[in-house]
Image (tube, rainbow, N blue to C red; front, side, top):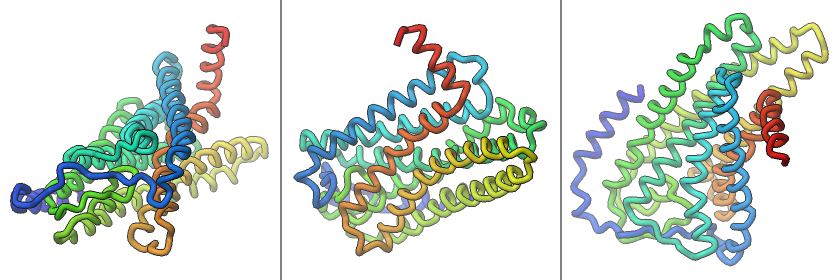
Length: 328
């Protein structure tokens, strides 16, 4: 389906008039958080702390998984992929965002904006795919434990991760291609903290029907399908847990699933809020919309190392051994 949609869109982009016939702005200006410009200097401090925690947490998780041979298993390989995704997702936005808040450096070059947009939308959709894959992993581990290692072997995990990345890149690439070919009529003020697709499209003075329809299509293909698979997986996991004979085993399984679901909700709720607000939430204060959109890129990178890393016994024990060896 993605291939069928991609190539007609690519032909549409290539058939558009050359961008030189339009007067594109040399740079865009990112507002930051509209309505809270005076408070942005102080808002940047918690954002910076959250970014540092996210980077340190995900780097530690990656180092532990890489050095501990016993952790080279499906669940931890997915976790390593998730950590890399979180690092790319947060680093593609937070440094520029902090420069806006602290230094007033609001300019971003025209061609850099679609590039940032590509990384944001690609890796946020990759994160969605990885959360879906991890839900399937938990389903197989709980409902088919004897077949877990054969169904989700290391080659199968690597193939699944590669397909998630390739499919998302294929789906998101037309966003950047279309934006580069659209006329902007000298309007260059983006009411956002980063180059988000709909925020940029609102500056276009030409026909944006293709961009809007394709955005809805990608949202359905990514969020709709991933959420459906996650919901079905956890519904079947819940049924399997309720059939367990011992209460302490049930509580342990419930605790693990609850923490995983918290991470999933922390990713999807802000994302869906941002998506729906762009299209239907005209009464939502703009600064609330932008703050939630910023947290959408920060909360998962912070929570994932804590929930999937610290709460995982093998990773926690390995981290404690490292700290003891270093005398921390």
